[in-house]
Image: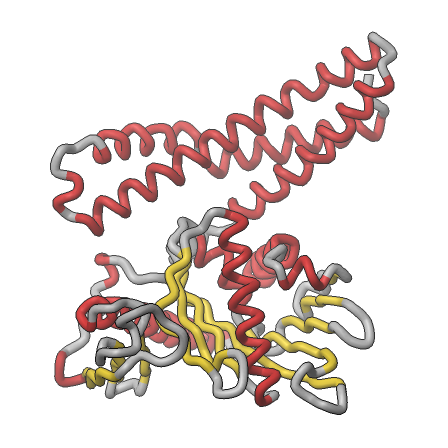
Length: 369
């Protein structure tokens, strides 16, 4: 038999997974899977490529979610048997294996539990992220590029497709800004907690006196629009500029006026795209980004009205949300959640799951209070 402490941990694990199964609603999800499989097998599916990609992406996601929950349930149900067999055979190695499996399951169930907290209106959507260098000169531009790499590596670790729309390179090093899409279900709900100002403290590699430098970069996260959003942009409200792409690029990228900049005149929102060879493709991508930004602006206006009615005068939680210290000590600390880690190299290489999970739990508590 497992120890009394382990028995309690097994009970909590089973209860938590049961709550998750209730929220996920597996019977409903299986019905959706059946419908998606029918839709995906339709002979005319790819006549509408945008809808086909939406169907196949959702199908893959639902299949993965069902498999994930069912596999966890099987492992949780098998775990007490593992302990009993190990105890019956007085096998210390098997007991250690069972204890290790308990720890692994606690982590896996906690991660799945976080997903159930993503219930916002747009949480299930893909995400558009923009990173901008702020105060700190060349160090800030370099820091913005480091953050871009961190998020791309995070997405690679999770198998999330990333499409970079536009990168504006700084003169000496790093980037002024970059806009990219994460085309995965729940990318917005997951990564929206990363929005805000990220602060870096380090010995500047660009200072010949090796002085400590503090630099800042801003992260914006918005949901990708869908056909149901109805964001209409009259032509007389839009200014279109074309120009030659800048920065690193393959043959043909920098030799034609293929880059597109869109300015929404009423709001002053400006977006650009230079990733594609074709001006038409770049305009379509830029329009998608502009529609997403207009949707987010509308959502913020609606939220501001609600906050005004509630008498909410608190500032945005996103500002100054995280510090990354590389000198004189090593630490990454989230200023909202108090989550911290000394493994800065792992964080900058995309291992930010702990920070994101803590952020989602924090946001859920803030919303509930």
